[in-house]
Length: 291
Image 1 (cartoon, one colour):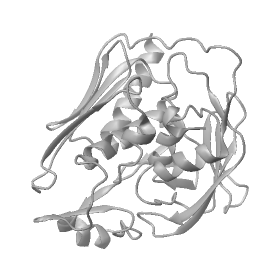
Image 2 (cartoon, rainbow, N blue to C red; image 1 turned 45 degrees about the vertical axis):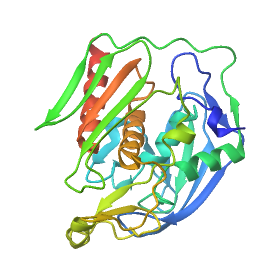
Image 3 (tube, rainbow, N blue to C red; image 1 turned 30 degrees about the vertical axis):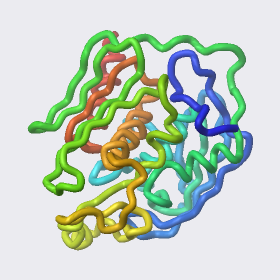
């Protein structure tokens, strides 16, 4: 299967199932823990879920917004005493490739960061292969009936009624190498695998010591994250001139996957965070209940 041919799992796309297991291992960004992940084909209708195989009774954590535990620099899911964090990159890859049902076994508290992007997950899934899980076309997803927005200061995330699915994001940093960036992407016009998945996570050199003192980014390195200093990028080259804002779209897609099937909408974010992404997901879920 050519990964660039995959489109986001919306409207008339037939859900895809994994032909076989996908396995990867690596270090978690925040915990620095080496973990192994095995993605298994899921039961149709079961959805995506994580299984902590290293814990007694192998607790199952659903990849749903109501399982979100915290959103500090990554998205963490939890149920009872079991948790798994930094799930957004893998979830973005699964959603973009149409994999609605998957059982993700992990032997630690955080998914591996790999190269800091979703591309290794996309390539691994493509290598195993996908098959349709539902005969015929699926029912078309209804458009978003009304605009929904969440704000925090000048940061916001909005979902607007739209004739096609689209994601637009803006960021603004004082570092000249980043500055103000905007990017807009629609799965109807370009591939997630080539335009969004390769974009790596990024950080600011001025924040590294503070984050590490707070117990974060223990597994971060110049091999799995872009780092920007006052005078430019410490570990170039970039994969795209605007790689940072493309990575923010990647994060947004992964967080929105916790809603389940997306409404047909234009998702617009500016200077947002995982926290705001999840607040929008909750607002969208609430609007579905009221319809």
